[in-house]
Each structure stands twice: as structure tokens, then as C-alpha cells.
Length: 192
Image (cartoon, rainbow, N blue to C red; front, top):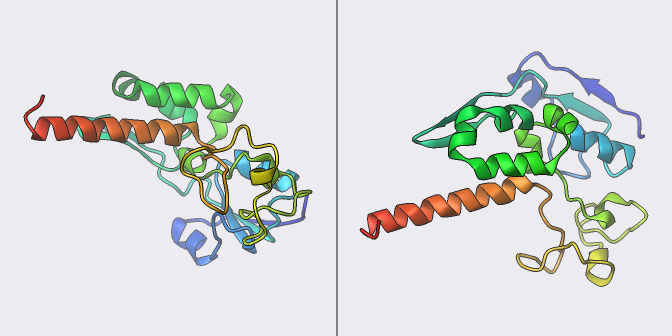
């Protein structure tokens, strides 16, 4: 693992002032919260920041489910959301996605924000032995396009990358939003 320093700011303003970045492969400093994805990337040498800025204890971890929908803070864990009674009653697809996407140990640590922002599971992204990966090195190409790509995207791809989104929650969220918009449209048009 590449050596790095860990910053533990006292508040969110201090964390922002440290000017870390999320999702940039060339960033000298990056944010970390639950760390379940970041630790793997550090171990695999995919990420090599000089500094990590901990967001532990600084982000919103609330969960609200009601007539207006579902809202959860970025720091709410997958386990907390999956165990929330109102989420279970109103958004069972979200619960199913959370329970199927990780082990109980990971769900206890992983944050909802991190789940949505996690890096691709593409083996070409996660194996630095492959030099062609536009996500790691923009402009280098996409090894998956000519390599083993059975578990990669068929729809919604680009000429630059065919990796799928790593979050099961993101797919479930998309479907819940689509269903709500469809229901609202039918109601508005008097087809309810």
C-alpha cells in the first residue's frame, strides 16, 4: 500500500478547507468516510493519494421516510437504512438492493454516500497491470472493450468506457424514481 497521511478535521468546514477531491485518480488528497471501497483501492494500488481526509462523524446520518419520499444522509450506513421500519414499509426495493449488495459486516461500515460514489468493479480498472483504463488514466483506452467484457454494460456505454455502475442501490433508486414519476404522470393526466 502506498504510504499516506490521515487528516481528521473537527468539522465539515475544516474538511472542505483541506481541499481533498473525490473520484479523481490524480488527486493528492481524497476524502474517506466508511472506507469499504477506498481501502480495497488503496491495497490494490489503484488509488495512491498522499493524504486521506476523514469525514467520519462530520456528515449527516439521518434517515427520513414519509409521504414526501425517502431522504438519507450520506453518512447513514447501509445497515441503518436497511433496518429502518419506514424504509422497509415504503421502499422494499431499496432494502432488497442493500441486503443483496454486501455482507452484513460491510453494510455495518459502508455509508450510503460511499455506496453511490464507489468506483467501478471493472477488473480492468482494479488491476493496475492493465494500462488501458480511461477511468484510471484518461485517454489510455478501455481494455474491457476488446477483452473479457461479459459483465460490462450493454446499454448506456460510451466510446471511452463500458464499466457498469457498481452500486445496486443506484439501480434500485433509479427504478423507484422512475416508478414515482410514472405514477405522478398518470395521476396528473387523470389515468389513476
